[in-house]
Length: 405
Image (cartoon, rainbow, N blue to C red):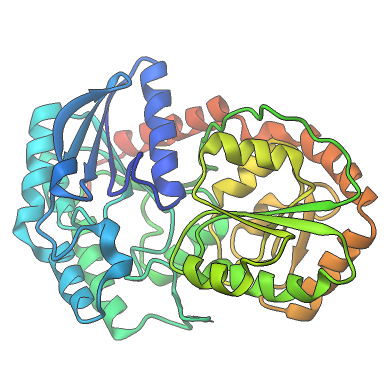
């Protein structure tokens, strides 16, 4: 099969898990006899490259007509953003890149990871060519321009006017695609999307992202100091500020370290406020190998997200490496974390409960050893090949469905 993957971000330009999933799946396609290509956005004109061969597949890294490239979104003034999103929906120049890539590669199937930043009206081109298409729902972008249904420190109760307008336009494009289906790595995210948009008549599947992570080059050794890890984008919704506010006063009474791996808009402020503490390491962006090595040596991954996470790759990477996880009891996290088996769940944003749960771990570190053993035994559910085959089965169902009028 000739499979074209679409992801506005794609390694080496990474901000989250969607682009890592896109790369992992593309590698799997090639390794299993499929012909693959990727359509992605170029962060700068110097990064543009057309039809470049990479690791056995073709990459189309294109410039877009947007006011600014999608990679620069966090650095833009607010007045530009509505214009950018309008372009992302309706600028006819977006369609040219889709037309050109489809004409050059001639795909049998299209898999969309992240289309925002390349242009939602590219769906019109896919519809014109009647190419069966799967969209993996890595977030809530079809319903929310921020992709999260979260503003500041508060979850959105419903769609605002901007999101309703945007979602209506996106829905119009989706309905033009004759053979379309949806995949979500968590049931919680699938349910939320279906609550916000009338898409439940389309084939839809809940399948964990088939990701492969580097095997750790280190092993776990018991230590008197409890080693905590946070891995993810440094922004308010991920709960990193919330976590550090809880941990700071605990350091006077308990022996622990926290390694924070990731970058984001909160990084500078966090370094200024907390960077002097000897129990804290703000490692910044690190390689996947370093993430695996740090997880292997650690005692607990902490995921204190305030918003409804979908199915974070860092949680899967931790559990696959035998590292227990303490996470927010929200979104897709309860589908991954089984209390008493591979971790614990705590109510999101509840400082008292989080403080109590962390103190319990610090006072009873031996409990982490038992959780580590059971976490290792349950890691088979994240098998890369088995999940990728489930994705291919979903593709087959989508491709075989009768075309919609």
